Length: 121
Image (tube, rainbow, N blue to C red; front, top):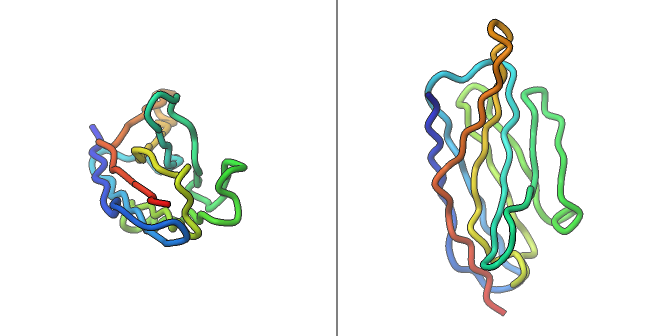
């Protein structure tokens, strides 16, 4: 089992910055991808950014150039630095970990509890 603990959400004015953190613990295999998703009221959950163990990153077009995802493999922790925040970034942000057990061929997907980010205009 894997636990994901998020921190860093809050209220910020448009143009401001926030940094989210997500610490993973438990049975984490070496092959994994960490990601951030978000869900605004009345909308579907969407991928914000992802990063592999090797550091390959992927971003949603709406956040590219403003958000930066990073990770510390030794601490099993990922970060999301959010700059130039806009009101449309307001959402609950969820940490996600996908990990692959090469021994069994099984893939496991885990979610954090979510942290609220509110950007005021």
